[in-house]
Length: 432
Image 1 (tube, helix red, strand yellow):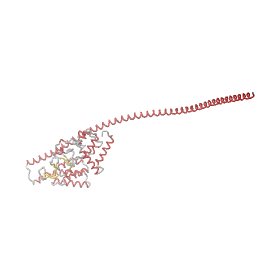
Image 2 (image 1 turned 90 degrees about the horizontal axis):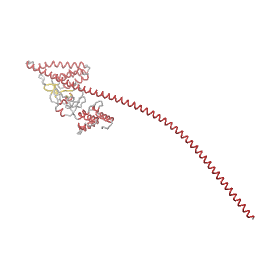
Image 3 (image 1 turned 60 degrees about the vertical axis):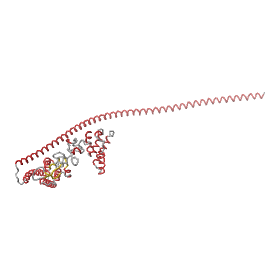
Image 4 (image 1 turned 135 degrees about the vertical axis):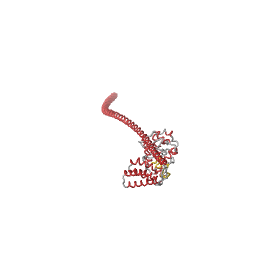
């Protein structure tokens, strides 16, 4: 994988992102689950072996193992160590959390035995996380600070009637039982705190959603206060559907909680059937109320402090990331300037070489024309030499022919003279 081009690796990540989005339907979902089971069944994928893996290889493995496509996003860059820790369940897979596991060194059975579970951001029941805050969508345990989706708690029966921790006319109230510690937390006070602190900042859609959460939480309530809260939420939801502004609905629910607090002492008094409360009992009740208020204030303070620390860590991480990005931008700008200078130098060299090539081409053309001229001259001289040679040769042959002719002529004359002499001598002998 180290030798593969970056374009191929990016195409591989894009292909896996498409599979994780499940645009191909149930068939593609089944293929992904098969691939996930295969990766999770690989016993050789350990922290020691993954340290040698390519970064893109790690991102793909973590995305398959967690089912979260954010690990493949080009703008999200985790260190190789963090990716390995997420894969081997030593770090939270929630990119916005990234807490070392187990979170807060929790030793409960869920944090100890459930792979990859983070009690700071995940639901105890469904093991999932989201980015909702300041909402009744999540219920936090007052004792162990583990979190549960309200929908999951309702579905699994973790919200039900139970014995009230306070003495009074109502022996039972709506409680939330935490699956992590198996202890209960009262819900009405929690809902009141959430609305008092967060409702003014909600928009219309958020307020209607929160009222629906509270309505479903207290739908099965049997105590008078819980029933009143359920009816009030249903009433406000109907009015908001009819056009009631969210500001008026917000004031209405907050006023209802104030009236509920005022009515509580009256209910307690009526529940005691007019019995006078002894001074020490009154002191005990006042102490209980004060302790409860202090406990809630401490819980809120602790939660705020934890949220502040978490936000501070996130801010520091963002600052570091911004510094890294700024440094990368500076390096890229320097690299770009350097590349631009190199390109300009190369363009100058190319222009120079082109000028040299044009000059050499010009000289080559001139040399070619000169060669053609010399060739024509040579051909002309060759033709003239051949003509002179032919003329000389013909003259020589003609002279030889003339000489041969003269020789033959002389020879013939000589022969004729010889015959004439012989003929004259014979005649003379005949006369004799």
